[in-house]
Length: 380
Length: 120
Image 1: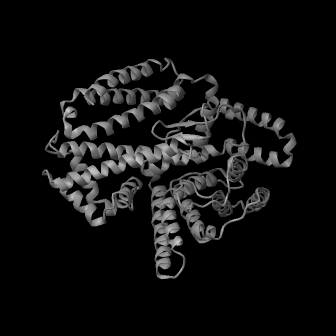
Image 2: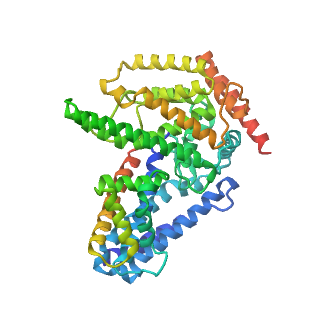
């Protein structure tokens, strides 16, 4: 394989150099951190690639497996830089400034403890955060509409889960870890009960699969609840909107595979419980009614295993622990009295939508304009 | 809410463990070991303390789960591997265990990468 590496490495280094050269000059300050990260990572990739052919060690037969693994990791790094991070810089426009200012405003309003991520409106799917680049990608038109913007709050929670260099977020991470341990213990007890009993063996298999999935589900629940506690009802509406438009069976539970996201209905139940805890019980009742309407329209019902996979007391435990973590982190918890500008507009948008759905589009333009003006004043 | 923010985070975490494991493997097999603060020692200390660390650090919990579920190691075996790594010496069983871990991490990366690309 030496000759293969001798051929492809210079080509890949040239590709990385081309990417470095395609980073535009004079980017606005919101993009400075991303630019620095991209330059640094591209340089690391080039150094790593060169080492694959220049390090005498890498030419020894005993390191051939190490070399191919390192090569694949570097290719993956380069792919991500080429398809996500560098295009976000190459396509940066002045019009991106609104969403970036909005995220900074949100950060100030909710006392988000980390630096604000940069926002790029060129996502090919939906909202997506890349923690390693401190980058949120949103669909192209998202800066002109309001109903999905609450999902930014969920995305902001993801970096909190893994970041270890900010002491302020330790309580949130501790609350998550404590929850993961409690959930793992509950599932272990469930499994032992099944093994002792005379029920179908398939249940034991399900519980093992759920145990693996719950590791990721807890994180998603915590991100949902961070958004719920810092924004309030608008996040619950946004979840309903996403499920109506893009969801599958809201009661779906994995019986064979492992999944990263819990069932949409379980997520909604946790979100509604969270709203009740912070003083939005009336809103929760209204949202729950609409949620039931959606389930009726979908014509679906939970399987018998569903309640066992997402029992009420476990969801309540997650909600309680999450609130404790968000509070201890020092974030502003939303309440019916919260009057921060972005908070108000995002919640008002959903009120306006339900007040008069057919007239909402016209009203949304006014609200967006209000938000833009407010954001321009805040950063003047 | 994103369908793949979690996968991107997981990928990054697994990637850094894969890198650390390969570097430790090179040091251990006579590559570039230095007297102190080597990757091998870092990995050894991590494994030695993993049983406690996993309750306080999500990243440690992730590697603990991979060692338990994919590499099929018991807590005692993980701690033993950690002690052997800190203790140095070219022990074939330690090299074999690290190689097994490196392959498991490569598989985990492939799974997460495929979920990322499929937007799951």
